[in-house]
Image (cartoon, rainbow over all chains, first blue to last red; front, side):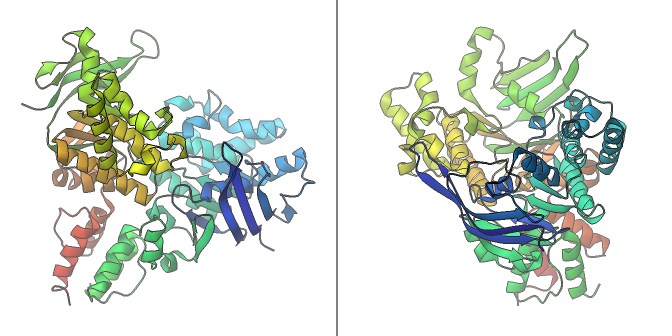
Length: 287
Length: 285
């Protein structure tokens, strides 16, 4: 059984005159426990809406059809109680774009404790969870710092720790690296990978950086409310034309190797990351 | 003489309180007309504070900002005139759209400058063209535009004042690749058409390498490096040490060099890399 099972999902929001504006048109999708999935799509493609529906940050069902099951529970059922929504948000945690909007306390460890405190977790266990969460994101030494004095990447890692402390099965990152400097981005991307590979979390990352998406195990491309591509990165990024017509691009290395192949240079091997790209070129030159 | 000169500028936030922070410390840089200059630096390096000084939003605690050789603070009462000459596009400028139509929003700046109707209309059309907004978009409510279009409308509003210095703080943050490209193309068109000094602040080394000729590197409230793009991005180790990096293609060249494959150092874009590697393989087949 899939961890997330979406069937024929349609969703519209209302404009000022109450006319429905379709955002998602017939999306069906299965995500297994432990997968690392990147979701790509142009601004307004519907990818963030999809993510927000998964833990019911959007609860307006006026123009909603289809079903979403999370861990065997139909979260779109009318029988969902407040408690059920609480349970759902324990399972699926979200990290957003702007770290400044996600931090609530004046001391790092209090901020991380905020989630479990609200879940009514016993004091002793909160301590353990906070320590574990800070360790996982590599911010233990900042436990007693003030969040507003940290760098963007550090703040974002605190926001991630706050979600980890709620012990979710699945974490969704909605453009969580968009506002970070290069080092901050690198730290956050490495943290995301660690959560998937070492902690076994199901990870869904929504991003405009193609170079981040290639690192996932699976890439889903959404265009105008529909899934147009779904597969391994090397398969997806071989489809330059479809990606470009969807307002996206290739990761630079994939673009480079595609162009070289078009020029008749024989290059065999993976194309996605700079490391793979360098190896592929070196092999072709017998070095 | 440079278009804009930053002369030994320091700035202290919350001076005289226990929360005192030195955001800029003895910064001196020159910014030239007819060029696009990029400013890069880690979060908190002082970039945003620096650019807010260019149009007098923040007054230096020490030092001077010279526009065409004149201190912009020589007469503090005249600082608002500087804001028409130096246009500042803040981060996420689309949050500042407020008029009923895109046209009215773009016209807001020129109207405040007291220009006549015909001139305003002309500037609105010209600015919309720079950023690639269609004529039919001008009649729409800004709130009916897509995210990327909203951003472009907000930038057009600053361009309509036709500033001699155009400063953009993270103009492409949060946009998809196509949206990002159209923003930078618009900026380039403005630069070419007006000869303005254009300054872009960004965290994307790839975009900086692609669109900027000169680069200023900030680190811990000071200027760490200034120079031409190829000079700066050939100092990859130093950039990494201050929390930055090099464009991805430059990084690829370094990886190849480690495998004994030496290619030119001034490679920043996929176009550059393609040309160099084809040569390595003995030309196109």
